[in-house]
Image 1: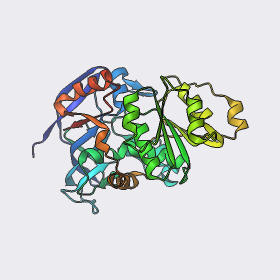
Image 2: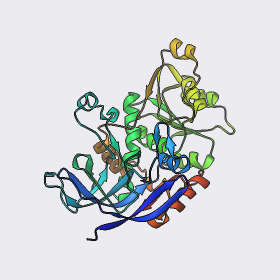
Image 3: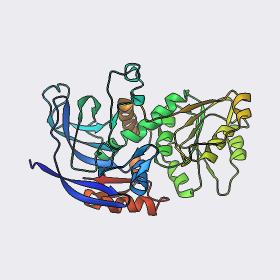
Image 4: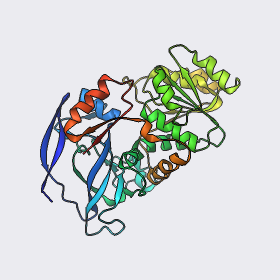
Length: 350
């Protein structure tokens, strides 16, 4: 095997260059993975356009991409539970394992996490990555690498439903039918939700969401949200609302969509840090509000749910609208930006 690999490097906002990099040498507790598929995430696009997300600032050239899958080609001397040739998906946030958050199972809050494609750590838009073996999960033979890469974003949906305490038979509304919104709908459907309501401005996304577990839709261009929610739920409003669009107005709409005693889960990050909410509604209705930051202990569940999709009549490939090679990484980003309506999930195959 060559000692060098191709990698798509973000040099500065809007500028990606294909370069040769040394293939990583796995440490004793790591495995080396030949990357086969990587999903393009909204956070990647944000770094590409703006060079930062909140306090995470790109200060030097970086490899983006964190929704990845591939094949193990080398293992460290301490790795016993994995083997060369295994097809795997990768949980991208390697944590310290010893802080109070890691010890309590909330390792997504670990202050020392090394998360792929979050500055200063390189990601997976390259041919090989090395990562600690306990963040690598084998996938079934029948699962494609593209599907396996979806374990990362579907994990966000799993964590959101766990935070929101979704119960079988409940009604859910999801604000925003982007990839996270659609995959959250998949999770809600497979978790036994009675109704899953998808809300968006784009009819094409709403139509696609019906193939992803959504039972009812609301098009904000021509429908009144409150009236439609009341109509769908028989005047009861929903048990659980998710805000995945990263929009302060959508967050307020989520609050008004839940019944008294309902729950709201905030997944999306709006451009502004401060959002105005109706405190009287929150207090008077005893509405619980939960924040979501990535996920923890979700990956095996995510793999299992991806496998369940076929049985449930859900084909995740319906979301994967565009495919690019590693050489075409810049074109992939430009497509995701210029065609937000139709470019639902852009995939890169190194």
